[in-house]
Structure formats: structure tokens, C-alpha cells
Length: 250
Ligand code: SF4
Image (cartoon, rainbow, N blue to C red):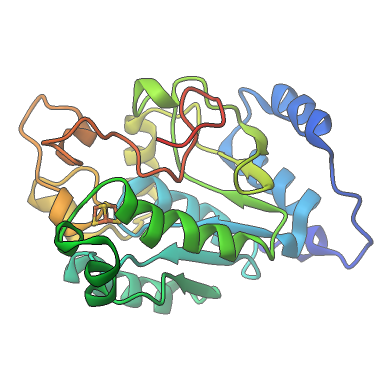
């Protein structure tokens, strides 16, 4: 059902930081769809959804959103280091969902990056590379919005365990809404099965969390889903998400 009424042209009074915290408390325990509807009602055209096209959570959120409205702006970060499978899947999927999507990235080519920051920046060189290819482009993109939504869950990592349903994202200067925050991976999988949500083909090849090709490997049975990300370094976050519910980039 499309709820265009939620997208009315009325003048919006955007909530302040305290209002967002209060709303998050009252939305705690709500279904993701209720949280999505709240965010659409409050932010309308000033809301955007981040989808990586790598992980099940983003796809489930995209599917849920598409059942509420077809007007929501979707964005995705393309670092230039993505798997070909992810890029192909992204193109096919957005043809299915027919929602506006903006592919966001840096104008710096990999060659220019190497020239500017050194030869280590040709493959995966956390954290400067993430800063240049993910964080800064997202920051520029979000300047035109008041809120962004993401598929992160508390159960994914210890750093994400305190993530609120909604909160003020100091770094990006917008509200951040996480409708799936209290869901388990099983609930995500169940929804995906029930609604036949398309998934990145790499998920059937042992990958369980998919980012840039140079820093993503398949995981073994019993390994954490994110164990294949930056596996040989201590890095666990690219810097897009806050750590420990606090504003602090990895
Ligand atoms: S994950 Fe690796 S390749 Fe991708 S942007 Fe970050 S440092 Fe660069």
C-alpha cells in the first residue's frame, strides 16, 4: 500500500535533538514498518535511505520502504572498489523497485588517490581510503537532507549494541534512523524469504557481509557475519556509522 498521504505538502516542523531522543524511546519495540512510517511522516522529502546492495538488511529495508511509498530517495556509496556482482545487482534491483537512487562517490580516481596519498591506497588502506571514498562523499550528499536511514542492527557488532532507533548524527548533521535496530538476523532472513526480496548473489557464495572487494572475504561456518570484513586488520567500521552509540568515527 502506498501511503502518499504521509508525504503531504504540509509545512514540516523538524524535531530537535531532544524530540528525536523522545521519539526513539517511544518507538522502541515497534515494528520496522512503524518506524519507517514515522520517519516518512516527520521528514518526507528530507529523508533518504542508505543501501549498500551488499547486505540483507539494506535490501529488506528497501523492500519495506517500497511497500509504503515509491517517492523515497535512496542512495548508495560506490567506492570504485565494489565487486562487479554488487554493481550488477544494484542496477538490476533498482529496475525492479523503480525508486529514485543516487550513486554517491568521490570524483577522485583510484590513480589520483594513489598519487595524492601513496601507493598503499591502490587496494584497501583503512582508514584514509574509507574517509575519502565513503565518509566524505556521504557527508556532502547528506547536506541536502535532514535525516538518513540505515539497516544496521544492534546484534551485528559490539560497537552497534547501543544504537538507538533514532538519534542525532552529530558528524553528518542530520537525524539517523535505524528501523531494523532490534531485529535479529533470523528476522531479516524470514522477511526476505516471505517477500522474496532479491539478494546480492555473493551471499550464496559464503559472503555474509559485503563491502569493498579488497577487504571482503567469505566467512566459515560458525564465524561472525562481519568476520570477513577487514579480516586482517583491527578495523570493524568504515566510519559511516557511530561506535558504541556515541559520535566517534572509527
Ligand atoms: S573498505 Fe577498503 S577499499 Fe573500501 S573504501 Fe574503505 S579502505 Fe577503501
